Image (cartoon, rainbow over all chains, first blue to last red; front, top):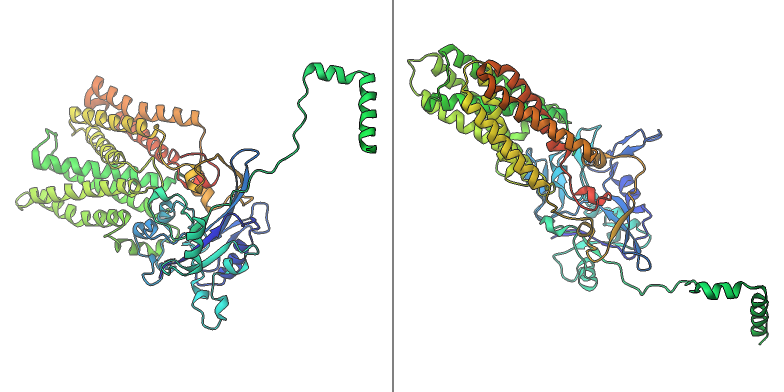
Length: 242
Length: 298
């Protein structure tokens, strides 16, 4: 099994609901709490497993706003796991989820240096590294109805921009989405083989917007004369009558 | 990258210690014309071990959860950080037994132990460099020049300590300063070349310009604190100049003009220069996660 997420950059509206749901679930999950520092002060900060950043791609009139939610990509060649000196970071062979054993981590930050996606954040309170667990404490929970055995970010997304599934199964929703919509990896040149895939935005033609009339200097001077203005007004009125 | 003082002190002091102990081993093996008395050699080995220990202790200060530091020896097969720790710890018993054979000159095996200590010191220095060089995420570190410079600068500081103690060989020290300066200059040329991922490949939009609109958080977080460290370009250039002047030019000039009489100021200047060099090594490194925070390239 190769579990992971597919994120649709075309439909993501950048509402941060996935990040909030993630924080809410995981702060009481297996690697919780996700500590907050100065939560009600002037500089609130804290640990998040999922962060959404907003970009503008291309130039006017073809520009498009892209909201890019990023969490752990559960890479197939996860350097965060190989660089870890304590063995706290590991990748589960059965489903490919990358996890951190909170009892073994010594908080050296080295794995976060190895991660190109900013998926790992040190929790200053516990002194250990924390990261997306792909809601490992939800997806196998047999007490939950089967439709809810998914990461909370996927369940909560109001624009259905997130999909969860097994990439090894060619008929799974994630495999189909990647196939049909040319799903791609972020920063593939780092060679980590990220499991999570992103669906590129569809490319509708640019919307025709108001274009100011081009007027030469002479035309402008001619139009500016009082008689010309009256003539133009009369012509306009007659056009409307007709 | 955020330059943590604990890590700078670790690489500086233990690097100097490994350089010093390497030279003492080489002298025992090949006789490098050091003017060492029997007890002088013992004292210098002890100084090297103290420097190594100070450095290693400093390195534990940057751990957020040092209770688990003992676990760091167990991923020897994949992690350079783990290898560094294993080599560093292995060196102690070997060096101590070597010290005993030096002290009791009738005991044999000194040469073999010196060779072993030398190999372990080089292996530790190399591993320290590889901790940084193996990271594909930081192009300024991901080069063979990184371990090369760690070894050269460690050896340079070791040879300067030897000269300062009055036992060293000025020619060797000046040669090490020259080699380390050359390595560092090649490194600065190397990192000046544009390379690596851009904001376009980071997000997968390679056929258009990409600009950051909003980073999604109002205040800083772990990622911006750890990786977003940025210093003004002009200040970096000035610091480079200062580190080259104090690290290489001043020690070389002092040793060339005044010989071993200027050993102590040359050593202090060398340490000051390499301290700034180590600070710059971190401050100039640009992690690719900065691309997601709006940098166009690394």
